[in-house]
Image (tube, rainbow, N blue to C red):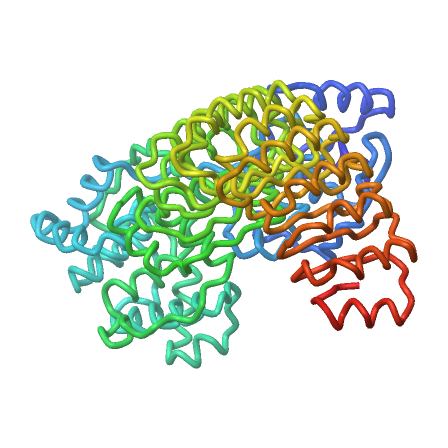
Length: 586
């Protein structure tokens, strides 16, 4: 079928358009931002395949409904249209990430006034007492914005038949004891990340068939003496539809679970489960719930390589506000302005923050830097490598560099002007930076000259592939030579150091514990100059190291504890000679 036929397939009146008319209609709606598309019951969709290799259908050609639906929800078709999708979560998670919606679905729930009105209709004069009992179980109460959850909770606490006047079923009445079994089953399955239930699951839990059938058919409705009004629904919840399993699992944990089971150590939590429980905590907006969830998280959280949506970053940050975390790795997830603001609010609870390749803009960076600058205790590591922050971003770091022990800015397109901005902060440090990495930025000799003025405040300086030549190397070497304490590491790999630069480095070799010079166009003459002093670690890989060089190295290898010369050709005798005198990696 054509795409227009797919869009009109649910209409009760058949529409027939010519090919010309179809093209005109599709061209109009594809670029119209006022188009609203509603897809109901996404969990009922049946897909033959979730393969990502399915080609995007062309607008004016024919394709199958499954292909249209995947690319419509994924944002490839009608990209400007507003889309509302209703679904239970199981099907969404089973669908490949390439076809999941790239936006947030807002589910509306009961506000406080509506809950009170509904509660008094069900519980009459007992409501105030029952509400107090419900509020004490905050994890359950936070899910009661959904009407069915609220009604089930009231019924459990009342322990009478009022519940069944609001849940239409002919089978569940008189089976109150079954709720405990259902809740236990839901909890066990939720722990195992099982969202699709078979008949066998109900049988294993001891749940009667009439009860499981009733549960599947339960609906909210007017019934009997309870005249339920049209409820005011105005609380926005950035959360997908809460299904009965999530609610019953929370219900079991907070109201039914024995204390000894509650206190048992849980298995390690998967990334997907962490996202789930953090979203739950964020939606509850309850500090006690967030603290409870935070206590279950591992000390290090790794979510690299595009495993999070922007909203997941906000949820995670909300939970981290309530617990110190050794390391948070969000590398290569897109962090938007809201995500950056959320991270900034919890940065005081993070020891190491990895944001490599997160497409962080200047506005987002400013928010993060402002909060890092105000920390009482510095970050052990801040990695913002591979973000296009440039010289403007370097200026922002000048205000927070005093609160970072390791600052990694590899591939951030910082030039000499940005180095000058950054050095304004480095020169004021009372405690040296443990590491500053500016690799793969074109700082050139001018940038090296600026950094040379402040090497006393940098223990490890990484300047790999920074377009530094022999003049810049000489300036750095002269300043390093004047240090009272040796630098722990100086990395000038993949710069045009040459023999002239090597001659300069030879004069400061005693003031560097590790010197990395991979691919620096250094020949025999330069090697002789470098190897005059004692050094712990020297890397000369990918340089012009020929037979004559081996002889020069042999004379001074006793001065080198670790020598690395990968990708160089030496004879077996030369190799044996080196390894008998130092730890050498070939």
